Image (cartoon, rainbow, N blue to C red; front, side):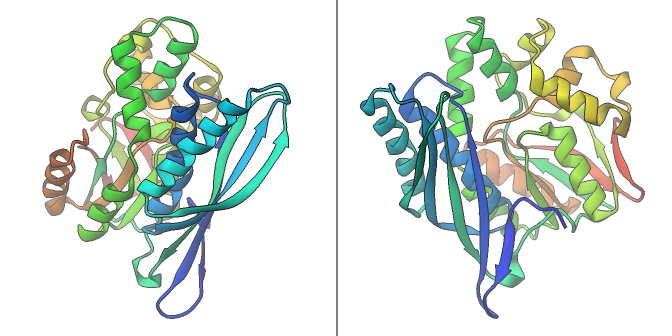
Length: 299
């Protein structure tokens, strides 16, 4: 089974959740880059219902990079791990032409509280906890096309841990959970559909979007990640050709430190969304689970 992280049961009360993730800078500020990379790496543990306890730095930096920049990257990661209640216990750094940073993350979870992609049931509602559009906004920023307010909103979203959303999902009795990252909302929804052997219906008009994301999609902002997702997913998603070009970009947009996609009893979905919104997350019910297979857009 392919899931967001590996789970190894130690005994009747404890299982270890293990994952790793790292990537090049997505923003100019070193501290913010480190914090975003850490939040993104820890997200897989939260998608599995675990709590972060121990992390190791993984980094590559050019030889001529000023030491204070490296320090700020590590400090951003350490601050975010501390926010999660974990600790960083060292790590490993190599010389690399392009900076890269991330974490190997170990979490703990009760074996009976593990959340995964394989439990979605027909009749479930789908809740998304964060707004989409980070890939498009970060690309617009690299091309000097972004409005600062839009970039600020995207950064704030990427810095937000999925820890509390994971707690609320577990309390709501979630049947299946995954985090939305590099494969976009469509790719990760397809993983849930395939692992749960169900059909997922996504309502594109209900998806929460970051400020400015739709306009950048309308303006034609495009990049390799969107196109790679399109190549892989276009033949596998029903109804994709029936939505606008800009909505296709948003549906295929790779997310950095994206939200959780949660399948749970429909009767509990509204209360979960209200709880998430009460904590400042732009959560929404974005679809449903039916008998069948695959992912379809629309009714």
